[in-house]
Image 1 (cartoon, rainbow, N blue to C red):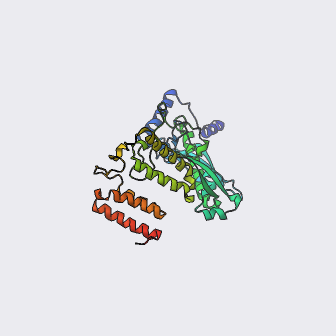
Image 2 (image 1 turned 45 degrees about the vertical axis):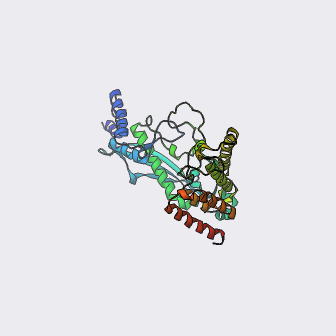
Image 3 (image 1 turned 120 degrees about the vertical axis):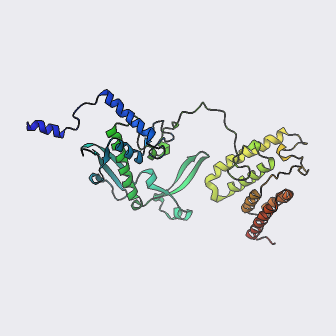
Length: 358
């Protein structure tokens, strides 16, 4: 009699789950995902990690609540696995059934300060990187849509990330527990948002259409023709961008973007060469509305006052200043008085900065 009672008290599963109950449980999870959870808050699809959404901490808490379950914060098991140069925690989270208090399962999560995102940080300045011990600094290659670039990084102080590491371990443990006790792993995955981008498999987040022809290069994200296709930009505008690219390439402060700027310069130069080879001596860029040397009959300026002010702010020599002002004076008459005042103010500031006499 006592043996039977003990077995009844210790067993967590009294009756097997029927197929109908299992289907209802899966349908319940999908209903919560669709009607209650919000993408980007409770779950999200990570680029390069397939189509299965990853469950986030708010979503894990919502999913547990839907089945009347919860984590027990005061019963967490936290193991300190760190050493002199590392903070590392392993967290075990019990998940209970709220009405009965019965433990339904446990989640396990771990986090370390030696993970890529916690081990390194970007140097705040070149001087900090220079003064950091060689074994505690590095130059890391990274990649964006605009191409590869380098980042100067230094090691973090483990005390600065200790609390973050502990919180991350607790979060991972909670999400693992929620997926385990609700059997939601076929719908959600875990922790891929914490995976370094270079370790992902490169699978697109969503199925995409068959690859189309390469897109036409566009202008940089500044100036009057920002992000417009190069073929749609007037020749004068292309020359302005080419001038800006040359200065950026020679600027040591913009060394991280040199590869991107070189590629943009090549694209702009290719477009200019294409126009020169395809147009006769008596033709000019159609966007200009006039032949070389003739005054434009159009009332629309080729440069906005804001673009002129921006170009003046970038000027570093007397010759560059004179070139920008010559372009402005050629079409000043079609601008408003307000534009004229704005350019005049920028002109005076540039002259003062370059040490030019009034």
